[in-house]
Image (cartoon, rainbow, N blue to C red; front, side, top):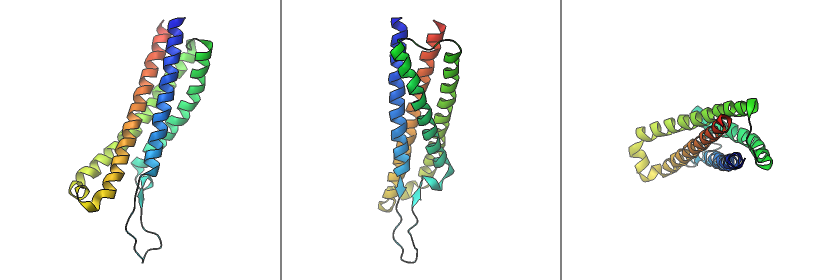
Length: 170
């Protein structure tokens, strides 16, 4: 009984931590923007955001999907803590499968965003080191940080899967 309650509390804490990481990742990628210099011939200056690359859109989508699932699963984790036990049986297997799918979505979103960001940083290394590339460097640093937060959230979800599998085995 005490072991089951401890696993339920650990799962709740990990879900809260994963949710915080996912929200921070979403905020970082949504606010990352490169401001182009003003040109009077253009109505609005061309700015570069996550919307300009499909990989960054997928990064944001993976964060939003992960956040929505984590909020839903957080409710069930809180109920398990209140009942002082972990989920067992087919409901436990369902959450293990759902957590695995969520972890894969989060990890692939982070990998896609990180892959594109690293590729562009390697191609434009000389430009990023110059004073003119400061905005671009800041943008890619924000993308890198957002991807890192998503990867840590995926790790939290993997630890949750381990907790759930352990509780089903005992």
